Length: 282
Image 1: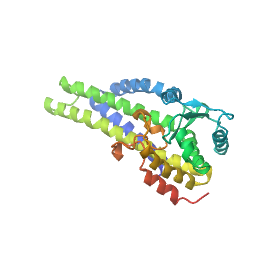
Image 2 (image 1 turned 30 degrees about the vertical axis):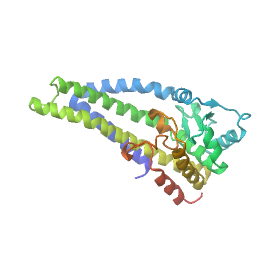
Image 3 (image 1 turned 90 degrees about the horizontal axis):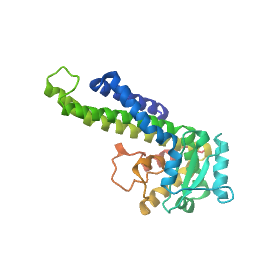
Image 4 (image 1 turned 135 degrees about the vertical axis):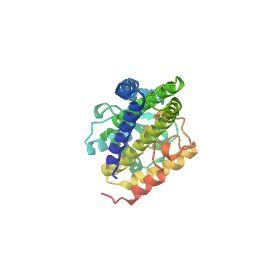
């Protein structure tokens, strides 16, 4: 299954799970209430994501005069990708990494760490920047916000299920004990299932960004080589990153910690590199 189609399927699965748990607990009204609250919770993250994350990592905006090499790479690749030039930031620190954010193409940001600029060649850095521009072109910030909103609504409904179980509620016509057990099971299983689906969406978007970046540069090997270097360097110099922003980075800054693949925001780096290595130069 292609990654674009997979994203559509997974978003549909999330929506179906939301409707299922809503129907079991609060009916259509319960779904609407939880969804509205989730939209409110995620609106700020979507609308102000660039400001929040840039401040969090003390990123500094650069101009053509202050970082000419980086600026020229971003500008040239933006032209190739048919994108407006995003704002460009550098994050202090030796851990090599990069991310893109912003609510749309007109309000996009590309940020790289000082460390990534030290260890990558021009060809490798172009691969990384093209990957990030692909995220912008694919509207991945919007897609991740939609997934987070639906998952958030499911978590709220699960909390409602817990309270309903405590007070002996539920909409089941079965005996009280069976209804409580069903509510407890739903309250436990639904948020886990939603998180697994949400992370699957994030991983599918990473594969798409890898392929899109290779298409922009016409050279998949540059990004593959960059990922190989980033894999080694991120283990030697771990990044003090926040879990809530881990999905933004080109390589998972939390990869040094114990994370199950199902709950990882990124696909295995070995698989990403193998896919890029199997592509032919355009």
